[in-house]
Length: 329
Image (cartoon, helix red, strand yellow):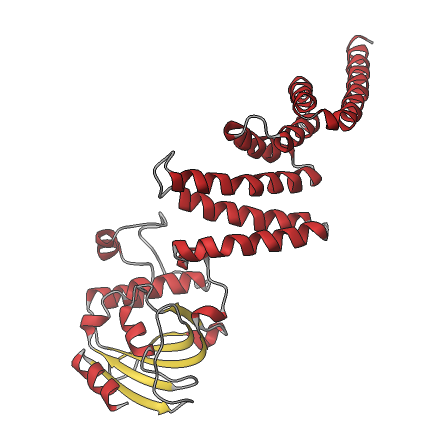
């Protein structure tokens, strides 16, 4: 404890414990998620309050080691125990980015800007310095940086293995480990006929694979391996969309499979059915014909689909004739 205080002081941070909290010496590995409330005050005669997360009834979250923009918060939180409340007085050398962080938090929580000379949504640091961030108190703090006081309350701690990580926080190895889990979850939803939920899991796995593929050189063994891994997810996703009568994603994803595997019967059959749904009868017949050539055992199923296609064609021809009659009657 004394060592923590000394280390903080050496960095221009003074800590005062208001409530001791639980547990012994703190030690948080990178990847730990901390939930905390904060109150930010200016160190002036009025102890002017800038922000207080309690009024939003939702704690902040930070993942250690992920380079949060306001680094001093991570430094302070690493010294705290669960349920501890502490006051940190911080030299202004650590707080220059606070107006930008506060702006983001206020907008996230739905606070209205006092005024803004720049409402384009995005601006660089130079433009912020010139035009401000849309909140008068923060604009003043940008012009005249001051020493700040943070009252932090650590309300929850989750170790890396205790929470499901957001995709942006995952390493490549963690993404690979997540893929079979997502497949199992998707398959479970599929068996339960929860097709939107299943499609979401398959799509998430595909997103991870796409991210990993982009890091490899095309046609190298690692690239080929990842591309091969995509095939079952593309087919499963396509089947979900087929059941949901969302035909164009089916055509898109099965075509992706067929570029790599031109004789993939599942992809051809599902694309053919999607072509029927999207009413591309010529393309549907072409795909159905290839299916029968590649796998004669599916001839009965294909003939049934072709018969259905003929009935639909007759129905559409009849509708078109009636429309033409209406034009000339």
